[in-house]
Image 1 (cartoon, helix red, strand yellow):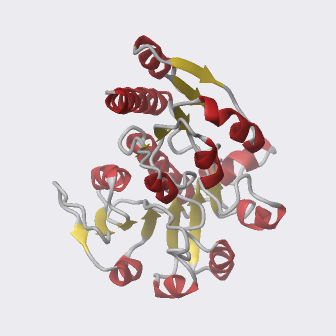
Image 2: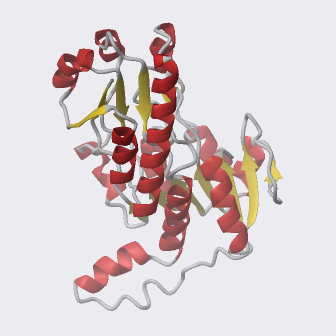
Length: 305
């Protein structure tokens, strides 16, 4: 059986697939090229770049498995895949630690002006007085919206920093340590920091928009290392300019790469940004590659039987 990998995989992951006896092609393809190539393959493995649309699935006449090396599957038409009885696999645990550490890193960065002081010092400045009013995270309240695998890892690290942690999660995942579960409204009202760790649901508006900003404390810090579109970016820029939001940290954006219209947000002095690298660590990528490879082997072996 043939496997197409369009966005790369770790060497260990590729070895697992080859050792299992599969033919593996690892190649970057444009959307048009993917439509032309997919009929030859039994399985496609993607990350976030490639889109497995309805048309791709329809064209994949031999497709038995669709796999995403990562947490979300919003670049795959999961519902249409279901109608074709094609399982969609992902790796919800593999990059959880990597994303959680980035979220915490961003939080600390904006609290101590790491992003802007670095740029100022490279320009020969010594902004000691300008950045003398940093804040500690110790004994502050962190609100986590979405208490899945990543949200739990963030909670563990926040508790280790001496923070109080409250969480809102509609499916209400059970916790094995002390986190206060509350409503979204109460979380917004009492949190000094708010971090998002949930998927973007098609057809739903942003999780954080103008009404939510109005419920928040003045001077709140907002972090999004989950999905672009969870925060209304225009409303966030307005809240930053008014002082309602003291700082924001963003790894994900409504458009990726961001457009010219998003530059005001990205260049804002109280915003820390990274280019969607939450899961991009050596350790995280190794776990993603091996986990998705083992899942694909199991699924293809089962379908073959």
